[in-house]
Every structure is written in structure tokens, then in C-alpha cells.
Length: 349
Image (cartoon, rainbow, N blue to C red; front, side, top):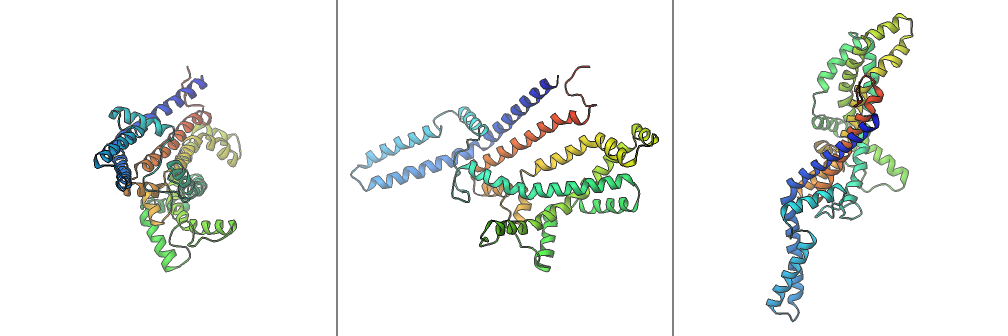
């Protein structure tokens, strides 16, 4: 039954998520503990300096410092064995309890990792999801047109353009677009999400964000829709050559109904997969691309966390993007059977 398959896929998704978070915890455990130990020593030294001005003897200060150090070790679970510490970090990450960052702060000054990550996600989605939606729409429309008239002038010219543009690195095209539309023809700002100082008023702020968003979105769309159109063209063209399409045309069914009522329904699963994976990829951002346009998204946050060795933020970034991506894959797997009844989803013959 389908509901059993749904439960199985959900359980598998949760298990895979826990395993991946456990791997992250193992990889970053040593660095995380080094950071925590350094922070504890700094706190203990600060307390020692405060006590040195009092009437305590050096021996009493030393004993008090050791007691405080043991206290902090118990708080941060450093008194436990390595497997226990890794397991505790895994459980905390799975429930999104990342604690506080060591250096990075949110725009409001908070050091809570969840606040920092959840503040950054909308910025990445605004850029990459907007670009993905636009290039999906353009790619689908162009791909369908190419499939309707294979070998035409439109099909040939766009296929050549696809080979030229699709292999370009996003950072290289981004730099070319900046040189053209920022310095040669100054139409757009050089980077960032808002102007400095930011404009006053919600409408002015929204307009300023869209102004800064235009060039990176344009770059991503120019880079992405060619390949999407080419893939859509091949999928739809293969479907149009099936026997049931020929039979529908022979019965005199209008071409528009054949295309959108028969062919597109059959070609929907791989097209939906392509579109959903593009949207899921947008959650993680792009380190180099966001760096070029100084966009404060998840990719930029990841790079800053690596540079500043802020392991809690790094764990929060990786765990969040992993959860969203796995959730999308599970959802995609569940809806696949609805779009194509030929796909078996755990049912019996």
C-alpha cells in the first residue's frame, strides 16, 4: 500500500539525516572542542585576574581556577568520553540546538546560531530561488518550442548557444556581467543586498533590495535557462515520438491538446525532478558567486564560518541545508508516483 511506502521513505530520510549529522559531528569534533577549551581558558584567566586584586593567596586562586575549569568542562560535556561527546553533539544538531557562535553575530547582535542561520536563509532563497523560478519558466517554454520543431533555426541556434553558455563558470560570467553593467555601463550596484546607508521606508527598502538583486539574478538566469531548455527539449521530443502520441494525432486531437494534455503529462516526472532539484539547490547558496556579488547568503555564511573557525555556525549551516535538501528529495520521491503511474512505489503485482 502507498501509505506504507510513505512511512518507509520518511523513516529512511530521517535515518540518512541522522547519519550525515553524525558524520559532521565526527569531522568537526576536534576543532569544536579546541574552540570550547580556548574559550574556557579565557574565562578562567579573566576570573583569575579579577581575584588577584583581592585577599586570596595564589594557592587559593589556583584551586578556585581549577574548580571553575571543572565546572565549565561539565557544562560543555568535556568531562565525558569522546564517543559520548560526539553523540551529544549529534543529538543537539538533529534537534537544532547549536548553541552560540564563537565570533559571528546576527544583524541584531545575537550569537544564537539558529538566529544567525534562519536570518540568512531568506536572503539565499531570495536570490537563488528567484533566479531558479525564472530560468525554469523560460527553459520550459523554450524547450517545448524546440521540441515542437526539431531541427528548425530556433532549435539549432539555441542548441549552439547552450553549448557556449552552459559550460561557463558562474563566477566567471558574474565577473563579466559586473565589468559590463557596473563599470562599463553603470546600470547596477557592484554588490551587497542594500545600499549604504540603507533607504528609509519599507517601499524604498524593497526597491533597493530589488535593485541590488537584479544583476546576480540576471547572471544566474542567463547561465541556467539554456541547459534547462535543452534538457526539456529532449524529454518532450522523446515523448512526442511515442506510439500513443501518434495515435492521438491520428484520431484528430488538436496539437495543443496532444502536447499539453498527453505529452507533457507523461514528460512531467523528469521535468518536475529537474525543477525541484534546482529549487532545493538554491537553499545552500553558492560560496564563490555570493562572494563576487557580496550577497549575505548561506554560501557567504559558510565561507565566513570556515575563515573564522566558527564551528557552531558551520554545523548549523550544514545541518540546515542537509535537512532541507533531504526533505525535498523525500517529497519528490513521494509525488513521483502520482505523476507517472508506470512507476512502482512499493506496491505488489
